[in-house]
Image 1 (tube, each protein chain N blue to C red):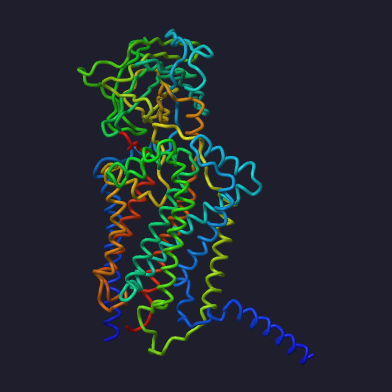
Image 2: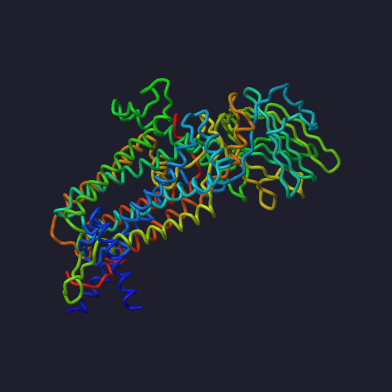
Length: 268
Length: 353
């Protein structure tokens, strides 16, 4: 009789555990069903932030040369491994971009207003021996994404550009529209951004496989934003440790409290 | 030698009798069941100990804190850099706050699993739920006071939610007292309104525990022999002992992981996630929108309030209250799952979006 009772209790506990696990997994999956979370957004979750400040002087000259001070102090991003550099600056409805590849190779810059819709790109590479800047889109953002031609009806976001080669270096200066068919860059928001570049091929690529891919977030400054303050704000790393310690302690505590009474021997 | 020792004991005994005659300490020797001295049954006392630590460190912090938006962040920074032991005191306050939220939640879980909310203790359960709400209120207002981006965005949410409350939300809106910043008024809530509520509710809570006694174990001990009784002073010593362990852990965490502080907030952007007790709400906000924050916040408290009125039988053994225990655990599993989703998700903008 006692054996049956204990076996019954164990069955109940097992069923309860399965139910709890199903609840936990189910609840985690629910937001995924709504499409708010996925692999693409995770790529950008803790990505470095690049500022896109407003120009306070005349905009850069699109001549394929980046001179000191042309893009200001706050919109620069440098890759410490490869030496690749990007400079960003906004004026009214345009974003000025300079991409500098220290070795001969194609370059790509992408922004996404909605990762579920993919990402819009501008690709800098050779077509028939001449450097071109072309609009492309990538449906699934990852480090293996493929490029495709955008909808022809959308209109281009590329307003002007110039590409030059200085020794091994490839320098592209491009003026992009903040709002267009590929993206909408809203000031005051963090925009998922991708920089991809190759050190082996200058031809316009069909995908990023085998190239360098960097996942970043761009913050387009508003007129009232102080770049120094914004930079400080994003650099301030609020530690996740207190939350993890507290949530972990509470999770363990709940399990211990419940288990201690459910497993306690004794009659009712 | 023997005579000297007896004389010493006698002197000591006389001393304590003299003290007791004047302070009535003997009243603390009333009997409580032995199980009241286990860790699970001292969680409420440990929480109380945590509140004492918070009060003491909070009194120190109020001497240097300036509750105005233009000064608040700088004054907290000054506490860290200029006040002797200021960084440590602030970090102890911060970690004690985390510990109190954890211990009060575990205390509520223990009360639930042992069905200590059942007749005749329903009112004390409701007082406990109110104490839980006050604790969360302390945590929220404390988060806002440091006045960095996390604080600012928390306050923005507070203001947004108050609009859904209509006339009842007026107090939480900046227009309630023109000229006095909402931060200043939340500071007053943190250091005067909530402490007053806490003391009143604690008095009621302790009164009912004294009146009804420590709740019994949910199942009889093996063999059914009567449980031993111990003086309440032993229970008190246990609480102080566990409390000192808690203080040691909190102090160690304060040294190892000082309380975070971001720079001055930037108005109009939303780039942070809320502190961990509100993380589960962040997922709800991400998926269903900010308008669901208010009903989502109220729902767990409503669920806790109705528990004694739907689980009314005499049975206290959790193994024989399967339906409500599983429902409770499912609720907790959902909260943890929502927290995990929030931790894994990227920051999103909600207010004004």
